[in-house]
Image (cartoon, rainbow over all chains, first blue to last red; front, side, top):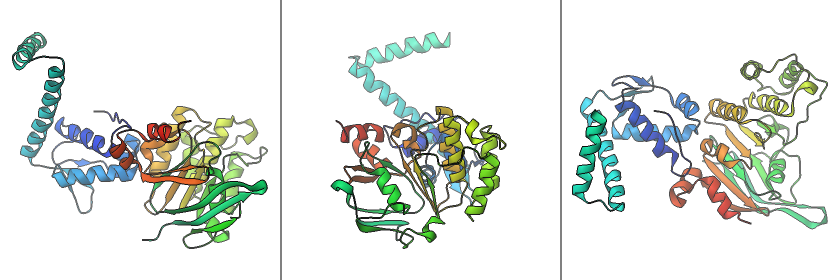
Length: 123
Length: 233
């Protein structure tokens, strides 16, 4: 998951999303230490205070935890990681459904289309 | 908390009554990376020169750590002017020892590391370097000081995009929470991700001083797009 940050939206919110995805995808594993604010800021090319804000927000949500001496680690609560994953999936589904409605599809048509596309991808 | 730089009712009028800055008030905190943005001739360089004590205010004052610009403030302010001032007959390594003599807070090993990263030879004579490489050398010198305030006047205008990225990373990694970096530039979209705050000035007056995330949040657009809107001709 690369940092594709867009200057039109608050950067810290986008950073948050990238780190969440990295945790869900297992790039940062449960219980692992994540890189320091400075390292992450340099990697993403963003202001260290912005990175700090994003990590503080992640900490507040419980997905990462501050350790007294050695930065931050990913939560060992697998249930929480799973919940975050489901929440992000749900957001994607909502975006998809509202786009389909804009295109004039009803629920039945959307489901039919999903089934068809799902079948094609599985083959 | 008091700011690192406090600017009170600052006015600068040049000969022939050209008003370059008019009654400017600003507090610049520590630990920030700040973009000083404005169209050509808006007073950015005048403000920078006043902070560095290279110009004398017509009215009002600038204080850095509570002091008026002078020997004391110069020892903690690292300034990159818009033009290079190095002797062409010098070698890069002579420049390093020159800075070492001149500034107690200069860290030669930091400069050598950055020169090596950019593949610039220490034995090269400045006259043999391209314009962009000279600008890189100058920026390396300025960023290799452990200053409290870095003032960079158009630091990335003359260098290629890859070197720009390197320079911005250098600014991020050298950053410490007690130091502030002020960057004046027109290349907003290249630098806005590293900024905390922006200061917009026009015709010598303050237009806004806000955090970049607030601009993105409240205006729903990038600082670059917002600048174009505010300063539309």
